[in-house]
Amino acid sequence: MKNIAIIGASGYTGAQITALIQADKELQIQGLYVSENSLDKGKALADLYPVYCHITLPLLPLSEAAKQTIIAEADAVVLATDHGVSLHLAAYFYAQGLTVFDLSGAYRFADAQQYPKWYGFEHEYPEVLANAVYGLAEWNHAAIANSKMIAVPGCYPTASLTALKPLAALLGESLPVINAVSGVTGAGRKAQLHTSFCEVSLTPYGVLGHRHQPEIATQLGKEVIFTPHLGNFKRGILATITVQLKTGVTEADIANAYSVYNECPLVHVYQHQFPKIDDVVLTPNCLLGWKFDAQTGYLVVASAIDNLMKGAASQAHQCIKIHFNYS
Ligand SMILES: NC(=O)C1=CN([C@@H]2O[C@H](COP(=O)(O)OP(=O)(O)OC[C@H]3O[C@@H](n4cnc5c(N)ncnc54)[C@H](OP(=O)(O)O)[C@@H]3O)[C@@H](O)[C@H]2O)C=CC1
Ligand SMILES: CC(=O)N[C@@H](CCC(=O)OP(=O)(O)O)C(=O)O
Image (cartoon, rainbow, N blue to C red; front, top):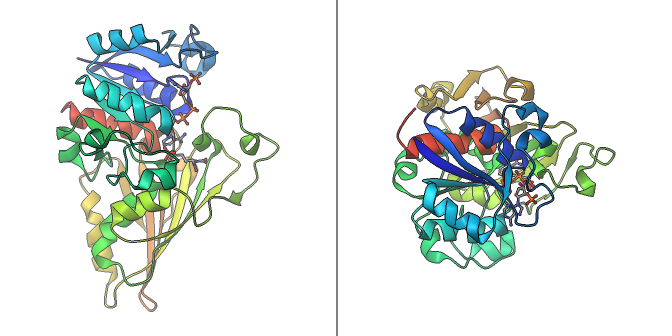
Protein backbone atom coordinates (compact mmCIF):
# COMPACT_ATOMS: atom_id res chain seq x y z
CA MET A 1 0.00 0.00 0.00
CA LYS A 2 1.34 3.44 -0.95
CA ASN A 3 1.14 6.35 1.46
CA ILE A 4 0.11 9.65 -0.14
CA ALA A 5 0.28 13.18 1.29
CA ILE A 6 -2.19 15.63 -0.26
CA ILE A 7 -1.23 19.29 -0.13
CA GLY A 8 -3.93 21.84 -0.93
CA ALA A 9 -6.54 19.32 0.20
CA SER A 10 -9.17 21.94 1.04
CA GLY A 11 -9.32 23.26 -2.54
CA TYR A 12 -11.62 21.97 -5.25
CA THR A 13 -9.14 19.62 -6.90
CA GLY A 14 -7.51 18.69 -3.58
CA ALA A 15 -10.83 17.64 -2.02
CA GLN A 16 -11.72 15.68 -5.15
CA ILE A 17 -8.47 13.72 -5.24
CA THR A 18 -8.70 13.13 -1.49
CA ALA A 19 -12.04 11.40 -2.09
CA LEU A 20 -10.56 9.30 -4.91
CA ILE A 21 -7.51 8.27 -2.90
CA GLN A 22 -9.58 7.54 0.19
CA ALA A 23 -11.69 5.10 -1.86
CA ASP A 24 -8.66 3.35 -3.40
CA LYS A 25 -7.70 0.21 -1.44
CA GLU A 26 -4.11 0.35 -2.78
CA LEU A 27 -3.56 3.80 -1.26
CA GLN A 28 -3.50 5.31 2.19
CA ILE A 29 -3.71 9.02 3.01
CA GLN A 30 -0.60 10.06 4.94
CA GLY A 31 -2.12 13.44 5.70
CA LEU A 32 -4.16 16.33 4.33
CA TYR A 33 -2.41 19.70 4.28
CA VAL A 34 -3.19 23.39 3.82
CA SER A 35 -0.91 26.41 4.14
CA GLU A 36 0.71 27.05 7.50
CA ASN A 37 -1.59 29.98 8.31
CA SER A 38 -4.70 28.70 6.59
CA LEU A 39 -8.06 29.69 8.07
CA ASP A 40 -9.07 26.04 7.58
CA LYS A 41 -6.22 24.40 9.52
CA GLY A 42 -7.53 21.99 12.14
CA LYS A 43 -10.92 21.62 10.48
CA ALA A 44 -11.96 18.27 9.03
CA LEU A 45 -12.46 18.02 5.28
CA ALA A 46 -16.02 16.92 6.12
CA ASP A 47 -16.62 20.28 7.82
CA LEU A 48 -15.83 22.13 4.61
CA TYR A 49 -17.56 19.69 2.27
CA PRO A 50 -20.48 17.78 3.80
CA VAL A 51 -20.57 15.75 0.58
CA TYR A 52 -17.36 14.21 1.93
CA CYS A 53 -18.86 13.62 5.39
CA HIS A 54 -17.09 10.23 5.52
CA ILE A 55 -13.65 11.93 5.41
CA THR A 56 -13.07 13.17 8.92
CA LEU A 57 -9.30 13.59 8.63
CA PRO A 58 -8.09 17.01 9.76
CA LEU A 59 -6.51 19.61 7.49
CA LEU A 60 -3.00 20.06 8.87
CA PRO A 61 -0.83 23.17 8.51
CA LEU A 62 2.16 22.56 6.24
CA SER A 63 4.81 23.52 8.78
CA GLU A 64 8.50 22.56 8.58
CA ALA A 65 7.78 19.74 11.04
CA ALA A 66 4.90 18.54 8.88
CA LYS A 67 7.21 18.46 5.84
CA GLN A 68 9.67 16.26 7.77
CA THR A 69 6.84 13.90 8.73
CA ILE A 70 5.74 13.69 5.09
CA ILE A 71 9.30 12.85 4.02
CA ALA A 72 9.54 10.16 6.69
CA GLU A 73 6.14 8.57 6.03
CA ALA A 74 4.92 9.23 2.48
CA ASP A 75 5.76 7.53 -0.80
CA ALA A 76 4.32 10.37 -2.86
CA VAL A 77 2.84 13.84 -2.59
CA VAL A 78 -0.05 15.25 -4.56
CA LEU A 79 0.23 19.01 -4.98
CA ALA A 80 -3.18 20.60 -5.52
CA THR A 81 -1.73 24.05 -5.05
CA ASP A 82 -1.23 27.20 -7.08
CA HIS A 83 1.57 27.19 -9.69
CA GLY A 84 3.89 29.41 -7.61
CA VAL A 85 3.41 27.20 -4.53
CA SER A 86 3.87 23.93 -6.42
CA LEU A 87 7.05 25.25 -8.05
CA HIS A 88 8.93 25.12 -4.73
CA LEU A 89 7.13 22.25 -3.00
CA ALA A 90 7.60 19.92 -5.98
CA ALA A 91 11.36 20.57 -6.10
CA TYR A 92 11.62 20.14 -2.33
CA PHE A 93 9.83 16.78 -2.12
CA TYR A 94 11.37 15.49 -5.35
CA ALA A 95 14.84 16.17 -3.92
CA GLN A 96 13.87 14.06 -0.89
CA GLY A 97 13.08 11.08 -3.13
CA LEU A 98 9.29 11.24 -3.05
CA THR A 99 7.23 10.91 -6.22
CA VAL A 100 5.43 14.17 -6.99
CA PHE A 101 2.09 14.45 -8.79
CA ASP A 102 1.64 18.17 -9.40
CA LEU A 103 -1.76 19.40 -10.54
CA SER A 104 -0.46 22.90 -11.27
CA GLY A 105 1.25 24.19 -14.40
CA ALA A 106 4.64 24.69 -12.75
CA TYR A 107 6.31 21.70 -14.46
CA ARG A 108 4.28 21.25 -17.66
CA PHE A 109 6.65 23.06 -20.05
CA ALA A 110 10.01 21.38 -20.62
CA ASP A 111 11.37 24.75 -21.76
CA ALA A 112 12.15 26.93 -18.72
CA GLN A 113 11.99 30.06 -20.90
CA GLN A 114 8.20 29.71 -21.15
CA TYR A 115 7.54 30.32 -17.45
CA PRO A 116 8.20 34.07 -17.11
CA LYS A 117 5.78 34.82 -19.95
CA TRP A 118 2.97 32.42 -19.08
CA TYR A 119 3.29 32.00 -15.30
CA GLY A 120 5.08 35.17 -14.22
CA PHE A 121 8.09 33.47 -12.58
CA GLU A 122 11.56 32.34 -13.53
CA HIS A 123 11.85 28.56 -13.21
CA GLU A 124 14.41 28.00 -10.47
CA TYR A 125 14.68 24.24 -10.73
CA PRO A 126 15.91 23.28 -14.23
CA GLU A 127 17.27 19.93 -12.99
CA VAL A 128 13.82 18.93 -11.68
CA LEU A 129 12.13 20.30 -14.79
CA ALA A 130 14.43 18.13 -16.92
CA ASN A 131 12.98 15.06 -15.21
CA ALA A 132 9.33 16.15 -15.31
CA VAL A 133 6.94 14.28 -17.59
CA TYR A 134 3.55 15.36 -18.89
CA GLY A 135 0.86 13.24 -17.27
CA LEU A 136 -1.59 12.90 -20.14
CA ALA A 137 -2.50 9.41 -19.00
CA GLU A 138 -3.66 7.78 -22.27
CA TRP A 139 -0.58 9.03 -24.14
CA ASN A 140 2.42 9.03 -21.80
CA HIS A 141 2.13 5.72 -19.97
CA ALA A 142 5.83 4.76 -20.04
CA ALA A 143 7.06 8.20 -19.02
CA ILE A 144 4.58 8.39 -16.12
CA ALA A 145 5.63 4.92 -14.98
CA ASN A 146 9.33 5.83 -14.98
CA SER A 147 9.51 9.41 -13.68
CA LYS A 148 9.11 10.62 -10.10
CA MET A 149 8.02 14.11 -11.23
CA ILE A 150 4.67 14.05 -12.98
CA ALA A 151 3.08 17.29 -14.21
CA VAL A 152 -0.63 16.57 -14.50
CA PRO A 153 -2.05 18.47 -17.52
CA GLY A 154 -4.42 21.43 -17.36
CA CYS A 155 -8.13 20.90 -17.80
CA TYR A 156 -8.54 22.59 -21.20
CA PRO A 157 -5.41 20.88 -22.57
CA THR A 158 -6.73 17.48 -21.44
CA ALA A 159 -10.02 18.00 -23.28
CA SER A 160 -8.31 19.47 -26.37
CA LEU A 161 -5.37 17.07 -26.66
CA THR A 162 -7.52 13.97 -26.16
CA ALA A 163 -9.52 15.10 -29.20
CA LEU A 164 -6.62 16.33 -31.33
CA LYS A 165 -3.65 14.02 -30.74
CA PRO A 166 -5.10 11.07 -32.68
CA LEU A 167 -5.52 13.41 -35.67
CA ALA A 168 -1.96 14.77 -35.63
CA ALA A 169 -0.88 13.04 -38.86
CA LEU A 170 -4.09 14.07 -40.66
CA LEU A 171 -4.07 17.82 -39.93
CA GLY A 172 -4.00 20.24 -42.87
CA GLU A 173 -2.34 23.66 -43.08
CA SER A 174 -4.99 25.67 -41.17
CA LEU A 175 -4.69 25.99 -37.41
CA PRO A 176 -7.14 23.97 -35.33
CA VAL A 177 -9.67 26.29 -33.68
CA ILE A 178 -10.67 25.33 -30.13
CA ASN A 179 -13.62 26.98 -28.42
CA ALA A 180 -14.07 25.67 -24.91
CA VAL A 181 -16.48 26.46 -22.07
CA SER A 182 -15.59 25.69 -18.46
CA GLY A 183 -17.61 25.57 -15.28
CA VAL A 184 -16.65 28.01 -12.53
CA THR A 185 -14.86 25.44 -10.34
CA GLY A 186 -12.08 25.70 -12.95
CA ALA A 187 -11.08 28.94 -11.28
CA GLY A 188 -10.64 27.35 -7.83
CA ARG A 189 -12.34 27.84 -4.47
CA LYS A 190 -10.90 31.18 -3.38
CA ALA A 191 -13.24 34.19 -3.57
CA GLN A 192 -12.79 36.30 -6.70
CA LEU A 193 -15.10 38.97 -8.11
CA HIS A 194 -15.30 37.52 -11.63
CA THR A 195 -16.45 34.14 -10.34
CA SER A 196 -19.03 35.45 -7.88
CA PHE A 197 -22.64 34.41 -8.54
CA CYS A 198 -23.92 37.74 -9.86
CA GLU A 199 -20.93 38.32 -12.15
CA VAL A 200 -20.77 34.97 -13.97
CA SER A 201 -22.33 35.06 -17.43
CA LEU A 202 -21.13 33.16 -20.51
CA THR A 203 -18.15 35.05 -21.92
CA PRO A 204 -14.78 34.44 -23.58
CA TYR A 205 -11.67 35.31 -21.59
CA GLY A 206 -7.92 35.06 -22.06
CA VAL A 207 -8.51 35.61 -25.79
CA LEU A 208 -5.30 34.99 -27.79
CA GLY A 209 -3.33 34.97 -24.57
CA HIS A 210 -4.31 32.07 -22.31
CA ARG A 211 -1.44 29.92 -20.93
CA HIS A 212 -3.17 26.74 -22.09
CA GLN A 213 -2.62 27.74 -25.75
CA PRO A 214 1.13 27.07 -25.64
CA GLU A 215 0.56 23.97 -23.46
CA ILE A 216 -1.75 22.51 -26.12
CA ALA A 217 0.50 23.61 -29.01
CA THR A 218 3.62 22.14 -27.40
CA GLN A 219 2.01 18.77 -26.77
CA LEU A 220 0.30 18.64 -30.18
CA GLY A 221 3.33 19.85 -32.14
CA LYS A 222 1.22 22.44 -33.96
CA GLU A 223 -0.06 25.91 -33.16
CA VAL A 224 -3.76 26.25 -32.33
CA ILE A 225 -6.25 29.06 -31.82
CA PHE A 226 -7.64 28.53 -28.32
CA THR A 227 -10.51 30.54 -26.81
CA PRO A 228 -11.73 29.61 -23.31
CA HIS A 229 -15.13 30.71 -22.04
CA LEU A 230 -16.51 30.87 -18.51
CA GLY A 231 -19.98 29.32 -18.26
CA ASN A 232 -22.59 29.67 -15.54
CA PHE A 233 -22.38 26.11 -14.29
CA LYS A 234 -20.20 24.49 -11.63
CA ARG A 235 -18.29 21.61 -13.20
CA GLY A 236 -17.34 20.41 -16.65
CA ILE A 237 -15.66 21.50 -19.86
CA LEU A 238 -16.97 21.24 -23.39
CA ALA A 239 -14.36 21.96 -26.07
CA THR A 240 -15.70 22.22 -29.62
CA ILE A 241 -12.83 21.99 -32.07
CA THR A 242 -12.81 22.72 -35.80
CA VAL A 243 -9.93 21.34 -37.89
CA GLN A 244 -9.11 21.24 -41.56
CA LEU A 245 -7.71 17.87 -42.58
CA LYS A 246 -5.28 17.08 -45.39
CA THR A 247 -6.70 16.69 -48.89
CA GLY A 248 -7.92 13.16 -49.47
CA VAL A 249 -8.52 12.23 -45.82
CA THR A 250 -11.67 10.10 -45.50
CA GLU A 251 -14.12 9.28 -42.73
CA ALA A 252 -12.54 5.87 -42.50
CA ASP A 253 -9.13 7.49 -41.85
CA ILE A 254 -10.62 9.52 -39.00
CA ALA A 255 -12.39 6.50 -37.49
CA ASN A 256 -9.12 4.61 -37.74
CA ALA A 257 -7.24 7.44 -36.02
CA TYR A 258 -9.70 7.44 -33.13
CA SER A 259 -9.48 3.66 -32.81
CA VAL A 260 -6.33 4.42 -30.76
CA TYR A 261 -8.79 4.72 -27.86
CA ASN A 262 -10.38 1.29 -28.39
CA GLU A 263 -8.45 -0.11 -25.44
CA CYS A 264 -8.83 3.02 -23.26
CA PRO A 265 -11.73 2.55 -20.85
CA LEU A 266 -12.04 6.24 -19.97
CA VAL A 267 -12.20 7.69 -23.50
CA HIS A 268 -15.33 7.05 -25.53
CA VAL A 269 -15.64 8.15 -29.17
CA TYR A 270 -18.94 8.72 -31.00
CA GLN A 271 -19.50 9.52 -34.67
CA HIS A 272 -22.35 11.93 -35.55
CA GLN A 273 -23.30 12.17 -31.87
CA PHE A 274 -22.09 14.88 -29.50
CA PRO A 275 -21.42 14.81 -25.76
CA LYS A 276 -23.03 17.01 -23.12
CA ILE A 277 -21.43 18.34 -19.96
CA ASP A 278 -23.96 16.40 -17.88
CA ASP A 279 -22.68 13.16 -19.43
CA VAL A 280 -19.28 13.55 -17.77
CA VAL A 281 -19.77 15.50 -14.53
CA LEU A 282 -18.42 13.52 -11.55
CA THR A 283 -16.94 10.89 -13.89
CA PRO A 284 -13.31 10.24 -14.94
CA ASN A 285 -14.38 9.97 -18.59
CA CYS A 286 -13.64 11.96 -21.70
CA LEU A 287 -16.40 11.75 -24.31
CA LEU A 288 -15.60 12.67 -27.92
CA GLY A 289 -18.09 13.19 -30.75
CA TRP A 290 -17.12 14.01 -34.33
CA LYS A 291 -18.54 14.74 -37.78
CA PHE A 292 -16.64 15.25 -41.05
CA ASP A 293 -17.54 17.25 -44.13
CA ALA A 294 -15.70 15.50 -46.98
CA GLN A 295 -16.44 18.36 -49.39
CA THR A 296 -14.57 21.02 -47.43
CA GLY A 297 -12.25 18.69 -45.53
CA TYR A 298 -13.33 20.17 -42.19
CA LEU A 299 -13.92 18.06 -39.09
CA VAL A 300 -15.74 19.21 -35.97
CA VAL A 301 -14.94 17.25 -32.82
CA ALA A 302 -16.42 17.98 -29.39
CA SER A 303 -14.69 16.85 -26.20
CA ALA A 304 -16.36 16.78 -22.78
CA ILE A 305 -14.70 16.20 -19.42
CA ASP A 306 -15.25 17.10 -15.78
CA ASN A 307 -12.55 19.73 -15.14
CA LEU A 308 -12.06 18.55 -11.54
CA MET A 309 -11.94 14.86 -12.53
CA LYS A 310 -10.35 14.02 -15.91
CA GLY A 311 -9.14 17.65 -16.03
CA ALA A 312 -7.30 17.32 -12.70
CA ALA A 313 -7.98 14.82 -9.87
CA SER A 314 -8.99 11.61 -11.65
CA GLN A 315 -6.23 12.09 -14.24
CA ALA A 316 -3.77 12.47 -11.35
CA HIS A 317 -5.27 9.26 -9.91
CA GLN A 318 -4.72 7.56 -13.29
CA CYS A 319 -1.09 8.73 -13.12
CA ILE A 320 -0.73 7.34 -9.59
CA LYS A 321 -2.04 3.94 -10.75
CA ILE A 322 0.27 3.92 -13.77
CA HIS A 323 3.27 4.98 -11.70
CA PHE A 324 2.69 2.45 -8.94
CA ASN A 325 1.68 -0.21 -11.48
CA TYR A 326 -1.80 -1.33 -10.50
CA SER A 327 -5.25 -0.92 -12.01
N1 LIG B 1 -9.90 23.85 -10.63
C1 LIG B 1 -9.62 23.17 -11.74
O1 LIG B 1 -10.52 22.79 -12.50
C2 LIG B 1 -8.22 22.79 -12.06
C3 LIG B 1 -7.14 23.25 -11.33
N2 LIG B 1 -5.88 22.89 -11.66
C4 LIG B 1 -4.73 23.37 -10.88
O2 LIG B 1 -4.72 22.68 -9.63
C5 LIG B 1 -4.20 23.52 -8.60
C6 LIG B 1 -5.24 23.64 -7.51
O3 LIG B 1 -6.41 24.21 -8.07
P1 LIG B 1 -7.77 24.37 -7.25
O4 LIG B 1 -8.05 23.14 -6.48
O5 LIG B 1 -8.75 24.86 -8.21
O6 LIG B 1 -7.36 25.55 -6.23
P2 LIG B 1 -8.08 26.05 -4.90
O7 LIG B 1 -7.84 27.52 -4.85
O8 LIG B 1 -9.47 25.55 -4.86
O9 LIG B 1 -7.24 25.33 -3.75
C7 LIG B 1 -5.91 25.65 -3.46
C8 LIG B 1 -5.48 24.87 -2.22
O10 LIG B 1 -4.12 25.17 -1.91
C9 LIG B 1 -4.02 25.51 -0.50
N3 LIG B 1 -2.83 26.35 -0.35
C10 LIG B 1 -2.66 27.64 -0.72
N4 LIG B 1 -1.40 28.05 -0.44
C11 LIG B 1 -0.74 26.97 0.10
C12 LIG B 1 0.57 26.76 0.59
N5 LIG B 1 1.49 27.74 0.58
N6 LIG B 1 0.87 25.55 1.09
C13 LIG B 1 -0.04 24.55 1.13
N7 LIG B 1 -1.31 24.69 0.67
C14 LIG B 1 -1.66 25.89 0.15
C15 LIG B 1 -5.36 26.16 -0.25
O11 LIG B 1 -5.70 26.23 1.12
P3 LIG B 1 -5.32 27.49 2.06
O12 LIG B 1 -5.27 28.72 1.17
O13 LIG B 1 -6.40 27.54 3.07
O14 LIG B 1 -3.98 27.17 2.62
C16 LIG B 1 -6.27 25.17 -0.97
O15 LIG B 1 -6.39 23.99 -0.21
C17 LIG B 1 -3.87 24.85 -9.27
O16 LIG B 1 -2.53 24.88 -9.65
C18 LIG B 1 -4.76 24.85 -10.51
O17 LIG B 1 -4.21 25.67 -11.53
C19 LIG B 1 -5.61 22.04 -12.70
C20 LIG B 1 -6.63 21.55 -13.46
C21 LIG B 1 -8.02 21.92 -13.21
C1 LIG C 1 -12.50 28.63 -15.47
C2 LIG C 1 -11.06 28.89 -15.18
O1 LIG C 1 -10.68 29.93 -14.67
N1 LIG C 1 -10.19 27.93 -15.52
C3 LIG C 1 -8.78 28.03 -15.30
C4 LIG C 1 -8.08 26.77 -15.78
C5 LIG C 1 -7.94 25.72 -14.73
C6 LIG C 1 -6.84 24.70 -15.02
O2 LIG C 1 -6.81 23.84 -15.84
O3 LIG C 1 -5.80 24.80 -14.30
P1 LIG C 1 -4.29 25.08 -14.55
O4 LIG C 1 -4.19 26.49 -14.12
O5 LIG C 1 -3.64 24.15 -13.64
O6 LIG C 1 -3.82 24.90 -15.91
C7 LIG C 1 -8.17 29.22 -16.05
O7 LIG C 1 -8.62 29.55 -17.14
O8 LIG C 1 -7.16 29.71 -15.57
